Image (cartoon, rainbow over all chains, first blue to last red; front, side, top):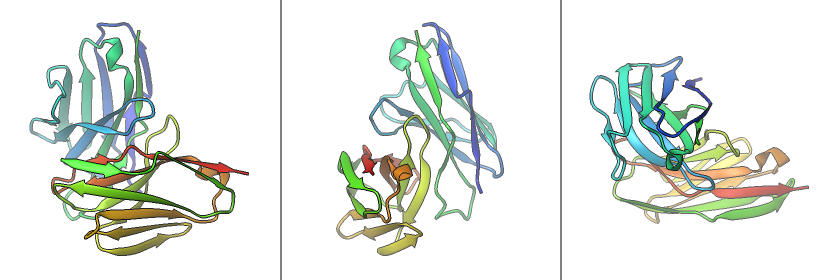
Length: 118
Length: 109
């Protein structure tokens, strides 16, 4: 089945540090990947849609200069949280969708990255 | 925009059946998904409905009525490992998913 790998799984760092999270589709090509954020006991909130070879599309209220997204290949998207602060502490999850002909295919999620900013 | 509602919590005993309802009001509809999420983990796919009716997958079934903006997930023969959060998600025409807040199901012995 489709597998999405996300690294790292846990990050603890000081305020002001930039953190990069990788999302890879292991056995399929993904033209589109999605980045979500989930605070404790809340649902997943879509942050941005990552498109291979083009700029990401950000949801309203998400700062594109703070959350940098790069989708350089059909199997890899990265999210960089720049100059992270304690309020950025959250569970970040990526998902990927297969290419054409996959209208009824679900998004497959990575295992998530728990980010804690001290 | 998307508005997706589901109950916050449900409790049931082992071996019982539980039905989780989800109502939605969305600007576009391209399928409804149910995901299971254990604490601290990412969601895992359970079921998908795009046409009206019932989809059955083992102990889990999901129903959709597009005209009513309504879906339910039915969990049969509950097991302790089914204790988790269940997320209802609606996909729009751009393949973006909007999630409900999730229903925490607690299974008791």
